[in-house]
Length: 283
Image (tube, rainbow, N blue to C red):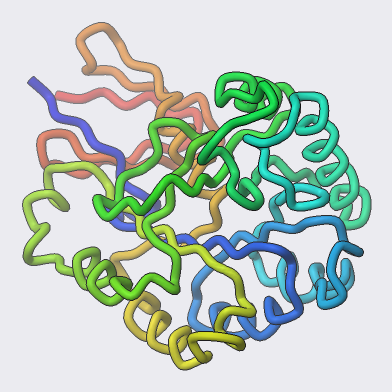
């Protein structure tokens, strides 16, 4: 029997992604630091005029898009999807997407739930109808807030994507050490599934609460590693879905890649890669 597990580009077993909310001016300093370290983030934006200290569209282009980071939506007025009637949630999500797509000239398909997100429901909202209208609005993933995910798993439901931890979590150093401990996870890395460290927060928290030294420590521990793929939320989503789109013969010995991605995976501990449009024949 074959055990088959995804690997990230280059055959890497680990990935790191960041997600930061509200489009704050401190995002520029945050971007300076993580970009210099080779890390990538998704920045989740509300309506540009919602806050006095909101980053402008021109700054979004310069500090986010031009540096290879991602823009996602975070609700026009930052209201929890779980507390809104469907028609309100639809309008809030769609207005936010329309605004930033028009201002930036890009396609936006990612999201982070604002406020309390989908941690509780009222006014007739349910997770099923929130997921349904997000899917209808072509929002393909949404970061949730249902507690931490110390197991470093990929999501099984992209509209309830649970991050690893918030950077303000006092257990953050322990989480990073567990993720980076290759010896402890040797068997898992060689024969098991991939591992994702997903950090989230607000850039102004470094200014107001923790100090920017915490970001320096995070980057020192997580960045610059040859065995880690540094990616945006959307890059993670697209690569994993490309892997899940591979087509197999009935006995699994023939694999066809219909996607635009080069995809890496291990079968019974042996590394394989398959290029876009390639058919792979296994012995």
